Image (cartoon, rainbow, N blue to C red):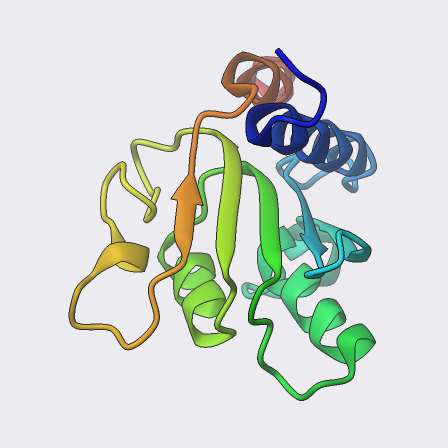
Length: 156
């Protein structure tokens, strides 16, 4: 596989999101998200912080999207940006990505209980929406799932 292939590029982004996920506060589910600009520059990185911040909206994706919009400085639209996350976004996060006009979503592990990018729901590809980002799921799925499995195993 060429290092310049889209697959290799997406894997590199997921490795970065996994590195971010390792910095998740101890009590939160370890999910990492980054937003990459149209030029390939990382605009934002965030982890889940719901428990740490006592904030139901503090999912890694929402925090990264907020930061990226600020860094990009072009209003709230993140057109041509890529949201990269270690776990399939839930309904709230998928909706936030659509609302932010993200161009692509790349994620690692599938989430059959709450996933909204093809598992339980497919919010991002709903034809009734004005904006539908490109989605690539299952990138380094085993590696992303292993981090989550370890977290839940330690809490049982």
